[in-house]
Image (cartoon, rainbow, N blue to C red; front, top):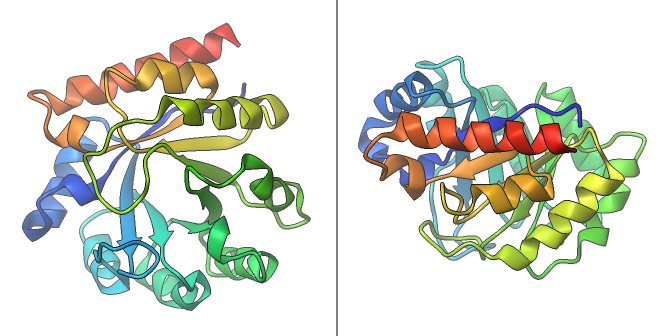
Length: 226
């Protein structure tokens, strides 16, 4: 398929009082990316972190900071997150139907990698124009739970979206987020997901390194079958 596995522990499940050491711990355990959920308390009910926390964490790590913007007005976050040192900027299609072209260009101008996310109730067809654009997104995040809080149950019916994306775009980075872990990874990887966000299944594991390794192995094995 021409895509590589990226395992991204969700820092929403980490100890926020020790974010730098938690980030280092995950990277030492084999994480490829660190997934940062930025929630505004409006697009989703939860309120988490913003650019100041990304800026503080960036001083302690060179890791790829995979920022998922669960916010109503993502365009307002581009400049501060670019300055803070975010690596990826994934916005929701549901709130960017009017300005996604401008948004993608601004994200790229600030040196970040643009991605688009969609909630479980949003049809996959809504992201196609953003992938086919002259200035395309470089990743699609398929939410496999209703976003807002960690620890929810994986929704296997979302895998049809992943399959449709993978069949249409063989070299696209496809990320899944919500309820991913050793018991659900094979379903996601066989559908075509290669970027795996995992929170409680990594942070709560007796051996987080083994959980990360198992998920990477599943993605690699399923790619070989394609």
